[in-house]
Amino acid sequence: MSDIRKRYFVRLFGRILVFIICLWVCFVRPEWFAVLDGTNFFKQFTPFHLLWLIWAADMFLQLVPIKNKVALGSQKLFKNRFRPIVEKINYKALRDYLVFTTKAAYKVFLIWGALIALLGILYFTGIINKIWLFMISVLFYVCDLICVLIWCPFRLIMKNKCCTTCRIFNWDHLMMFSPLIFIGGFYSVSLVLLAIAAWLVWEVCIMIYPERFWEMTNAALKCSECTDKLCTQYCQKLRK
Image (cartoon, rainbow, N blue to C red; front, top):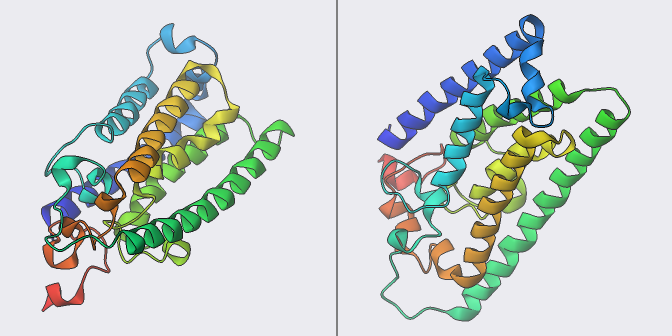
């Protein structure tokens, strides 16, 4: 097992622990959720401030080039992770790849949007409240790494072979925090805005530097060059 994969499993267990603690808070310390209201973020410290810092730091790391500590799939938008192929680039094939993956990506976007709209309906009709919207985001926080390490349903739409080559790898925080859109207040709005910023940087880089996102133009994304081995479906040749 690669160091990155080990590190991500530790992170997964940490996220599961966060979910369990937040669930405990729902029943034992529900007053802590007052931090979600208005400007209460600045009025009293709660353990949720630590969680906010962790989430904000995670998104910041998606906006700066980092080596070794962060998976290549999340960092392939940056020049320092780009290893251009020696052969001449087939720009028609690159464009076709970009069009195909973008169409698939926005199918995911529409499906996710429909799910979030459903949550909005449940919230505004009083079936769920702010606390449960927050808990759904924490659940998505756990599911994010389950998708990376165990099984990802979005591969059925994206048709990507692994997370390293995934077109929507850095959509994670936007999807994770989208239930918070309905809550309002500094805590939720700040996380949503940071997630949108990370998503926009990713999307703009795909449009400007598409060659960094395809294994036929970026040698670093090829199975034979993989060092992360994050997912369970990396090239079978590497197992022999």
